[in-house]
Image 1 (spheres, rainbow, N blue to C red):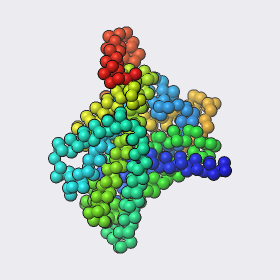
Image 2: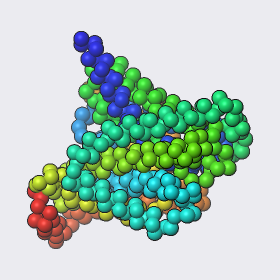
Image 3: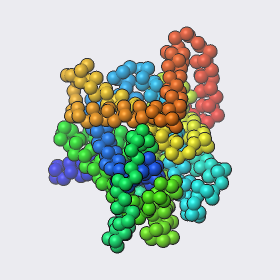
Image 4: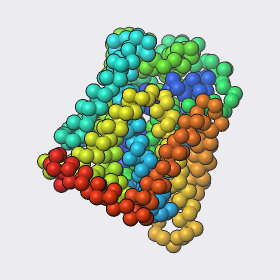
Length: 464
């Protein structure tokens, strides 16, 4: 009986990891990736590389997670490895300033597929203002759900997770049925037309990294597993392999069905695929499945991000007002409203591909810092208990790829200015830390203003 329970526990953890990684990336990034690499074969290969990156990062985080069994993920790890200032910069930059960017990507993915139900070419046929208005409306809906009905969000995740898996399986089945019928003309292009300039592959790299995000939550799923040295690699390996196979087969199906000249356009690829293989019904079904999947990701991110920001505020890394919790709904209401405001800004000013590039550039370096921390802690504290020890080849691979992904944008005329801007935004956190967190100049006026704002919001929103 104990063996059966153990197997069930492992299977459950694998299911949680698979569900956490699979998101809307497989439905919104294949166009962008193919645009960057120029041909079907390298596009498919990039999805294999993404699986290796996710596995390397996941296993590295598992050592950190079992070594530091605390909440807070990368903020907690960076604080314990590098100290409070880098931890503050992580909370300030990734979560306080830019967490809404990831939510905005999910919402814009939703609107993209929503309009595809009614229009053949939404990019040209839907007015800019109409798309932004719909996106802002969806943002407001999620603010309300996260504050006033958090249990509804959690309960709906099961349906949303099942639908996105079904959508991927339908794409795989329909694509290979198309191949069996003798349609090889699109996939047979192979490597022909591959972009020879690796500096131009930045979009592909960002799209792949974004599509596999979720691996960083693996350590939370595996933190209490029995016999971690044996079972953690099994859980991570099976989970990431499953996701990689599903992604590779789905992308292969896209390339089997859709000509290269069409797949490099910004049309919703799943809707286009459904229309070609199953007609109007297929287009609507896949569009609805992607829309529900997008909503599920937004649900998860809103819930997780609001609580991460709230935890950082409790640790006195962010403004005190963000610690307030609604007396009636027991939700971090101020944090949710703030997160919704930031999301709304990115929804209005951003486009899907640009936001993906920025989201990856601004978050991935902090994951690289954590993997560097594996080496740091091996040297600094070799005797510290590590229920799971990752083979060092995994964090080394992740670090090398991370350096490449960080440097590449600075070699492109189109992206180096934006990348430099984000670095400068990050550095604004240094004076903020010393002025407001450490209060080195004893500027009590700011702290009094913070207290006043906190009391006002607590009274107005009925918080504690």
